[in-house]
Length: 281
Picture 1 (tube, helix red, strand yellow):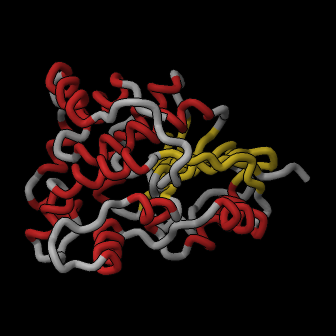
Picture 2 (cartoon, rainbow, N blue to C red):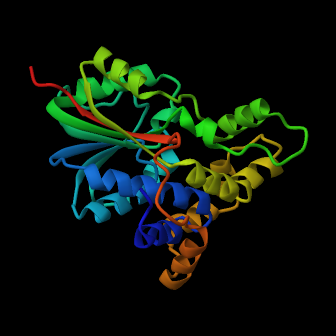
Picture 3 (cartoon, rainbow, N blue to C red):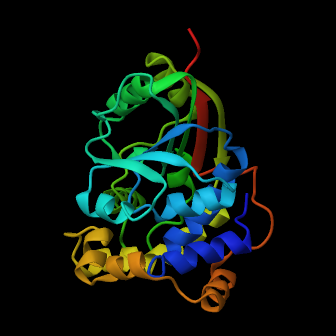
């Protein structure tokens, strides 16, 4: 699914220094908003600064009641500015201070791949969800590596390129659909649907945008700092949380970075939207 121009422009406006991120998020949030069907108390697992969640629920057309969770105190401090968070916990996702079976739904957008102890996180989701409660995860899939073009620097092997990229992105997991079914089952959950998105053309568009943004920043630090750390040092993150690009400028950039045509469903998809529920007893 291609992101609508309106949604992509919104992400460009809100992520002015991260066009690659805006491109990826525009596609996956379009996908998530289309299938989301929950109400009640939600858990935003890996809420970050809250910007993405704000865009998501505006797209859905819903004012949510959320509990935010993120391990980064600077991100949760920024997220606290959004009224849709009833409360926010700065803690690990394996140990969230909320009662058993107290959550109606869990959303986690491009977060779970960054957590080494994924098994512990899914166990916590199983503990927190009410019977009948739903979960929605967006995550990279095994097709992500397959779809990348690779290094443009002569002499860099594909293996080294992929390893360096995973370190920069802090990606620990690329689970298959079968992997997700099995992990969910181990923790009393059931996967209802796992749909792919981000085809090869879209993945390579993200890759090219990333080379001149986050990838460039990472290279300039000789691989010692993550892009988010460099953004904070340059005060780019502060700017992002205080203001957005003018709509006309964001719309123009969105036109420049968007891909044309329908997604290629015959190719491997780089990401999965995993949706499911906790069965009733």
